[in-house]
Length: 129
Image 1 (cartoon, helix red, strand yellow):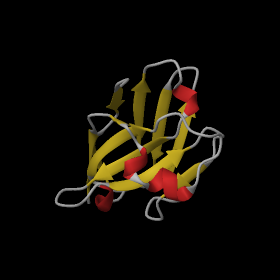
Image 2 (cartoon, one colour; image 1 turned 90 degrees about the horizontal axis):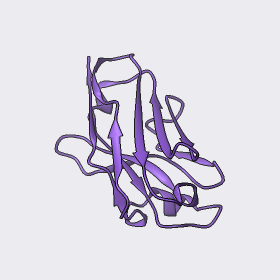
Image 3 (cartoon, rainbow, N blue to C red; image 1 turned 135 degrees about the horizontal axis):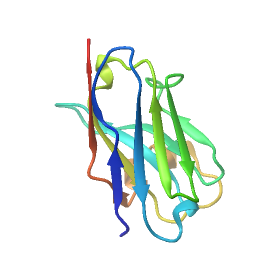
């Protein structure tokens, strides 16, 4: 499997912004769904955002309107712009990649952790109140 490396986490105050990045390797970066998941202390890992091959995006209700996911296939980079951060956003954020997919995906597919076969090591985001 080709590794994913996240960066950009840190300690910020409520209302601040952060931009997470995920650098991938391999020849077929643009031929899959890429996503961000997060795991808060004491909680299960949850879906945050995903972007499919067509560029279509999906967001968890809790981050809709505040977070923006994007991908640069030429640079093999996935990003997550996080604005108006809240203490509830505190978590370790993971980048994930599916195997090669169709041009359009379904919401059930992109939101399920079982769809992803490659995960990064995570980057920690802490939002203080």
